[in-house]
Amino acid sequence: MSNIVVLIKQVPDYEDRHLNDGAWTLDRAGSDPVLDEINEKAVEVALQLKEKHAESGYNVVVLTAGPTGAETAIRRALSMGADSAYHLADDAMVGSDLVQTSWALARALGQIEDVAFVIAGNETSDGVGGAVPAVIAHYLGLPQLTAMRSIDVADGKITGERETDDGIFGLEATLPAIVSISEKIVDDARFPSFKGIMAAKKKPVEKLTLAGIGVESDEVGGANANSTVTSATPKPPKTAGEKVTDEGEGGQQIADYLVAQKLL
Image (cartoon, helix red, strand yellow):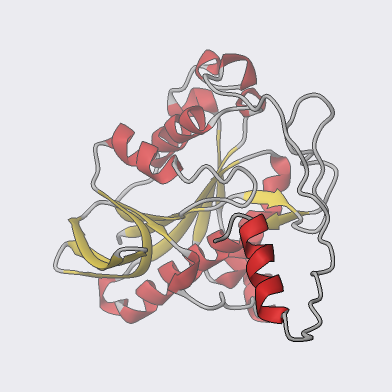
């Protein structure tokens, strides 16, 4: 059977995120772990393709790099319907930048047999780098389709559409390929059923280490990163909008406000 591999990531709960003092990194232990929403959509897309092309016998396999707690995200994906998982867990990965992470994931993908194609979210909600799928494609020498709003597979090719400010573009790539999806590809991912949750407990999760995938510890990690966050500023709190009472000059007041905000 061919495998559709989905890259997933555990992130801190959206409503309860904090930075480590002085390090400008997310405090991942300080909030509940969740499967990133864009990754849920990536799993959903993979499951839909598996169901649509049942004759192809696809398996959906999820791959993540993260601490032991990433098991929460893995089990979520498995309970949605993914068939199995690979978990790269190694303390040396802590603080890795996107290039290092991409290298490790590319090597980890080499441990999975019969990969038809790889699906990932276009960017995670914690790092918001948006480059990991493309860098993985570079390392593996594979074609890439990024920020896709729709995809399908047939005749050894993956096709779909990408929407930009300039229009909608139809794209295709020969398999195997790396594909990243945008939020627009599906409205919502399926919610795990009780049966799915129970079944997920019995599905295989293979543990990977850096040594096992042929990556040296000095190739990853914060101390060896080529890029780092040097500062971070929280978003300002939302304030009430400015109310305009129209006494004959409402239009002018709005125009003046837009000019002051450099929107006109």
